[in-house]
Image 1: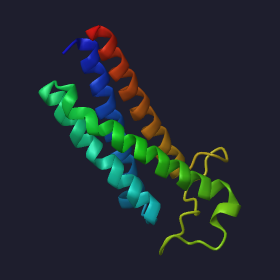
Image 2: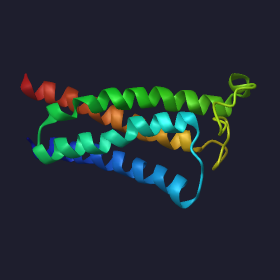
Image 3: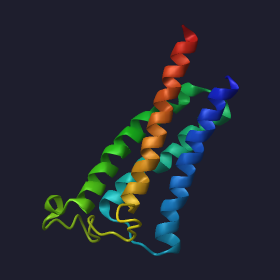
Length: 141
């Protein structure tokens, strides 16, 4: 594996790890109770640490393939969750479980919420993984 590809794989692993530690910080340290959609995002983010870590350790991109699928799905869930928070008409009367999904534990600058942060992590992971696929294919030709 080329050094540049190994660096991209490390970036993917680090981004997934930072997002995972961040979500655990919000729930375990700050005591923010995750809503149902937050749990779905966690379900899609946490395995990425293992997937990209294993691919990095084995130096095999093939092991990392499920990462693009999980990050794409996570991006969809995060986008929907963020829309629920920012577009009141979408969440009218819907509580989404014990903790309302339209609740905002944080709201920095009027737009940075927890689903926004998760969405940014999923976007970075998805785009970097997609670019690495394109780069590998162009090097094979």
